[in-house]
Amino acid sequence: MTAKLLRTRLTLLLLVSTLLAACAGLTLQSEIDGLMKEGQQLYSEKKYDAAIDKFVVVIGKDPAYWQAYLWAARAFIAKGNWGDAIANGRKAFELAPKDKETLPVFAQALFGGGADALKNGRFAESVNLFVEYLKLDPASTQAWLNVGKAYLGQKDFRQALGAFAQGLAAGGGAERQELIRQLLDGGIQAFASGRHRESIDLLREYLKYDARNLQAYLNIAKAYWETGDRGKALDAFKQVLQLDPRQEEALRYMLRR
Image 1 (tube, rainbow, N blue to C red):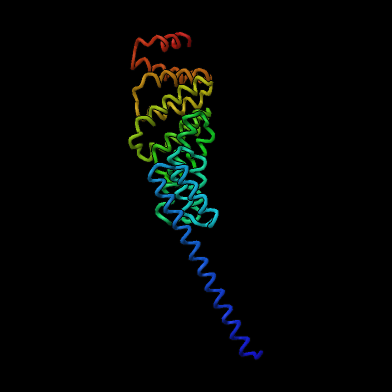
Image 2 (cartoon, helix red, strand yellow; image 1 turned 90 degrees about the vertical axis):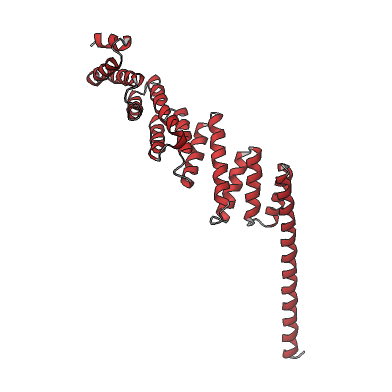
């Protein structure tokens, strides 16, 4: 066999191999396109489990196919399966961070998971998810409110104060009054837990927004009293009596000085 003939045969073999690979690629892509179309149709029909099965098959065939993770995340969100929704949303975002659809779906999964954890008393999990969410949307006052509530659930009063203050610094939005109310509730909770310094800090922050709240002044006064700072306690009790000269608890403390 001449060298020229050998080169011709090698060229032909290479061409055939390339054509076969191209055909295989087209076949795989056609199969993936078909599975994605079926999954999206099932999703639109609210047949979420069946839709997820289709997307999982696509991922098995092409683990880098981010659209399958994205649609799987959407289906898991619809089911309220937050762990899987977050995992798939995160993967889609990692594979296609610049696509306009991946970030909102991932963020929705994080927010939903954080809210579910908060509702069911899994406060540490809720904090972690909302903190991650806030990296994507730092101006979300609802997220700051929820992470603050989760910190209160953990009795982490300083972090709760920081979260509520951040939400208010961002403007507060529709959640403004609730953020302010949580400062008051958090201060009262801190006092009841014997965390008097944290109670004072929360209530003083609250008074920036409601400077004539008798309950806040009364709790600040009692918190100062418990810390042994009687001078500041008496000043706060005087504020209480200016607002309500007949406030019995304040009068009793004033007589004990």
